[in-house]
Image (cartoon, rainbow, N blue to C red; front, side):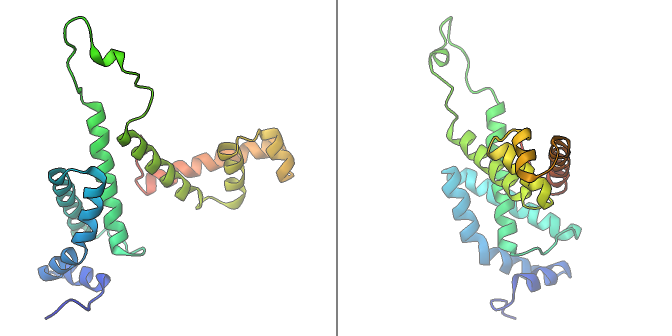
Length: 193
């Protein structure tokens, strides 16, 4: 039976029921988009292939475990997994020793390393985007205080005046906003370091 006109959700349901060809169709349907995205980011074909494989291993494990929740497009979820694996790879690379000093003079000591690398920039951009997305889930009063304080660097005194509440209320809203953000980070398994 041809599975070309079958939706992603239907293919997932069929795969969960044991129809292996449904998974194959799902992978074939999205492999070019996912692989191209990874390759464009890492600029290394072998690494892209590894991350691509790891992505679909995670997809398969999640589908088999029954923990997949259809909250929008399947391909967006897969891209998110690929993106997180790519970021994890770059984070691991940063933790590994990259060179050995040569003699008493270390060439790397002479390089100004205050500018973040391309990988560090990419990781920071992803973290910033993840946090911004999570902020949208906060209650409006908490979100308002957090945005004013963090994104606009407004003092709590000025926040209290602008929102018509006491400083203690503004501080309390900020505290609860941070508590709720931590919960969201934990629930959605967002990596922030």
